[in-house]
Structure formats: structure tokens, C-alpha cells
Length: 636
Figure: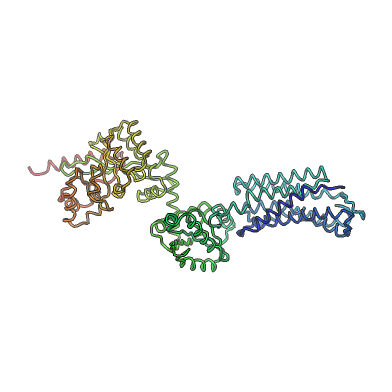
């Protein structure tokens, strides 16, 4: 029988290239990586044995008969192992930790190996005559039977584990099995064409480029593992319930270095930092984006030594200093899933301690992790609820007018609650919205709700002259958001003069020309603007006089000023055509204090708390009745 070796030779060349690519890269210690490495080595060995054993059959080479038998027998033994190794790889990729499944996957091949070893001395699998003529024995189909049984088991296991495999991996493994089946069927029908090993090589090539390719899991700039690799490693650790230690790391001032020295210097700095991380034993480092990194280690001593060195690293390249925030996340055993772990990591790196304070070292305890998770849950809930305004409700805090003794306006405030989170205070969800670029969407929703309530006559019927609606800086600098406000006003028929938009002192102090133009656009349509929380920022009266603002709301912190300073500030504002409102008034003493300074509008718990819109009319009727009763009882 004359054999066609061209497919095997081509497959061997491909596998040698893949081996060089795979083994030249650093691999983290996953079972699937070890199994794939074994798979590659067995495939190369099988191809070498297949090609070598076939060439030895040439009588002109004068090879010993026993050596031909040994090489061909080794080829069969390796070939019998292949389908079981493929099934083990499927189990490893799905993070299966059941030893019984792995033993079951190996059993058919082990039994086939025993049968093969028993039949080999009797020439039942193959024979080689003294003239070097190769022929199949009656047991030669054992390799095909073994292949069929194992591949059927592999398909069944793949279906069982499909929920634990990404869609791309599931597809790649399915096609890989088809490659091997197609090659085995072709070789069974054409025994002179050696195609089984080529089919296995094709399957390994596909698996390498779609699943195992180290380049797919490496960050090009820092040469560390990337977010994809972190996902895979975390999933393996969590499913296997293995102990590990984790730190989230952020480099600060990279933007300044990038601006001053250029992109090349920044990239070189990241590469230097990456080399510093991977130079340590039992430390696995990942760059998850920008200047954020994650470091993992299964060894506590190595991890502690790493933290000690890293927190004392003051310079990363020459005299260009870069500060580092290292966040040691302690309760990793509470991670519920890979997504939960990544959410906690992102939340920690985005926290105020890291983002604003650049804290050098932070041991993130269980309470901090719980707070991060709550922020993440709030963000997810807001993204889900904002489009339909579900879970959100408008409240109104009436504003008392001293000279008329009545409530003639009110500030609209937003409240949020879900069955899972309960009541979420504005102090929680507003910072989450600001940090996650949800402020503009939230403002649009609030404006739509408010305009519909105004158009329904809810506030005019209560005797209000206007209502106040808060706008974030993100909305005021967004021309599309301003367009949406104008469109909503036109669609609902709201009188713009009935609405006063509130912006904070920090927002109004911003010198961005786009913000100024957008405020002027809204004012030209008849809307008014108020400056909220004056006294918490750095805006000065000269700067404010250039803005189209008709009302200034003094922050509650100003109630602690001395009477002379407070009266001086109020007096300075009398030079501007603005109304003044004192916020946060809670006691009778504070009320007398602001009235004595000449302020005529007061907002605070002393007069009214924020009320659901459904309770507003009842409150105002009761307040009007009490005012009338007090007037009747006063001495003439």
C-alpha cells in the first residue's frame, strides 16, 4: 500500500508554527492551557510518528523491522488518546471541576489502549512483512470506533457545558469536532490518504486562533494580559473556588505626561510598568484599560511582597513622577461571579478615594465592597428605569414668601426607588448619574415629567407663579439636550416663563462658551435661570452679573456666617436684578435671621418638606387655612 503523506507534512509545518507561537508566550496556569499544550505536543508527536513510520516502510532505507513496528505502534497509541484529550479540553474550558467527568472522558481511550496492546503482538491491528509491506489487521477499526465513541461523548459534554462557554468558543469547538470527524471518515473510505492527523491539526489551528491565541489575550502597549484574559482567569478561580489575592492598581498623571511628552513616552512608561509587574514570581498582571491594572496571585507571601514593593514605587521612568493608587480588595471570597468581580474592581478604581484623592494604598474591606456593589446596582437600575421613567417620582418642596405669607413657588425634586434597592436617596443616585454619564438622560426625563405636570395645570391651580427644575452641567453644555427641552416645551404647550431652571454655582462659574450660549438660548425662549447652592463654590458677583440669572439661592452653609457677613453678601446682591432665596432653613431662629437680612423667600423644613405631587394641593389648602386662622386671631 502506497500512502499519501502530503497532508501530514503540511499539517506538521502548521503545528510547528503554532507551537512556536503558543509556547513563546507567557501562559497563566489554567487547566485548559495545560491541556491544550498537551494536545499540541501529542499532535506533533503523532504526525512525526505517522510520517516517520510511513517512510521507514521504504525497503531501500534498510530500517530494522522491530523499529518500524515500534514507531507505528506508538503512532496508534498516541492517536487513540486524541479524542479523549479533546473532550478533557472541552471540560477544562467550561471550568468543570468534577473529577468523575474527566475520568469518564478518559475511560474509552484507556480501554482502547488496553485492547490495542493485547492485539498488537498477534498482528490484529496491523502487520509489516519482512519485505516492508504494511497491511491492516481485523482490529484496525479500533481507532475509528474509539474516535466515534469519544467524539459522541465530546458532543454530549459540549451540549451540557454550553451555558458555561462563550458563544465563540462553543462554535469553535463544534467546528473542530466536525473537522476531525470529516478527516476520519475520509481516511476510513480512502486508507491510502493519511488525513486523521491533518484533521486534528486543522482543529487545533482553529482552536488556537479563536480560543487559545495568546495575542488575543495580550495588551499590545504594556505587553500584559488584557481584560479578556482576566475574565477567563477569574472565571476559572471562582468556579474552582480557589484562594487568591487581588489588587486593583491605577496610575495617575498619565494624561499630563501624554500631553507634555507625547504618546510614545506614555507607551514606553506603560511597558516599563508592565515589565515591573511581570518580573515577580507567582504574580499575574492584567491591563484592563487606560491606566487601570489588576494584579492576581495564588500565593499570599508573594502577593504581600509585591504590594510592599509597589506602594513604594515613586518613579516609573526617570524624573517623570507618576503617582500610584493600589487597592487591595480583601473579601474576594464574596465575589458572586466574574461580572460581579469586574464590577467591584471598576467601582473601586472609579471611587472618589482613587479618582479625586489619589490615595496611595487602600485596603478595601467588606463594607467598601458593599458600597461599591450598591453603586453598581444603582447604576444598572437607573439605566434600566430612565427610558420608561419607572421607579422615579417627582416631589415638590414649596417655597415660602415672607411678605405675602403664602407659598407661590416650589422646587421639583426627584425620588427613586425599586423593589430590589428600596428607596435610593438623591445623595446616592445623583452622584452615580454624574459619574456614569447619566445626568443628561436623567434631566431629560425629569423635564418631560415636569412639563407634563405643568401642562396638566397641577401647579397653576395651586397658586404657584413658577416651579424650579434642576439641570446638571452635562445638560447645559449639551446642545442636543437643550434642543430636547425646547421640543418638549413645544409639544406639551408649557409656558416657558413658568419654569426656572436651577444650575449650581460650580456650573455657572464655568467659562465654557457653549454653556453660556445654551443658557442664553433657553432664556430667549422665555425660560428663567436660578443659581443654586451659592456659597459652596467660588463664583463671584462680577462673574454672575454677566449671566442671565434671575434668582440666586443661598446655600444652607451660609446660615452659619456671622450676621454682618451675611447681610453684606445680601446687600451686594441688591445691586443685581435678582431675587434671593434662603435654602435649608429649619428653625425659627434661622427664619428670623434671614428675614432680618432682607430675604423674602425661604425654602426649608421650617415651612415645608418635599411632598409627592399628589399631596401638594392638600398641604397648600391646609397652609392657607392656618394662615387665615392666624390672621383672624391676631389683635386688630
